[in-house]
Image (cartoon, rainbow, N blue to C red; front, side, top):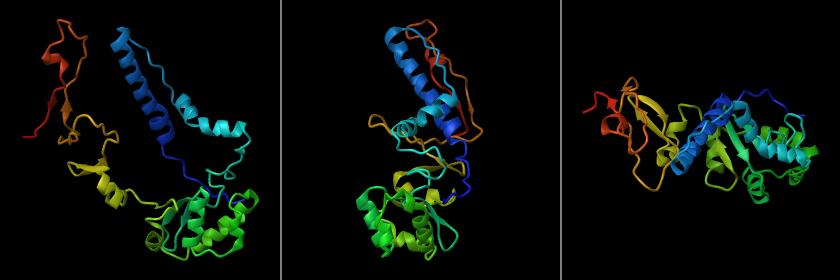
Length: 236
């Protein structure tokens, strides 16, 4: 069985995905409810609940007999040879996700694979040996060489980029995915609404944001002074 030691997925699943994003969604739901009913909401969010919710598809697949409770043996957990990361000749990595038959066919063609064993794409018993063979093939080229072979195709391929490389990738540059704030590279907010214009933050990392208080519309306390966000900065 092909099983490598895996790095943990940082704190994306619990803190950010299962915790912060679900909390933000809950707060928005509470605000919408308050705007309609005038009643407030207590939002109870736990990272464990959120992480379990993110696993909904896999619990469903398990109940249908489509997912084995065994590490590195399934379609999406590095079990399949066509859905994993591979080390290249120069010690870097590429990612493959050629699940659909037409994408898998193009992967085989572009990789120059002639071994008939690769025709058994969904034969789970063949996955470990095919993974070993595919790793040997990937190791014959550098990551940049594989980019020239795979990019722009339907292989479902991507180079695995470092934190310093990601902001410079042409796709991220075209999307404006990253911004520079006072010399610090960081991700731009991902939600872009059709109404309104995105504002580029021009503040300083240590800029002080005055505490903001929200009061019901129509309240005597609802003045422009205590309802607007005041940002103290040294920008012109």
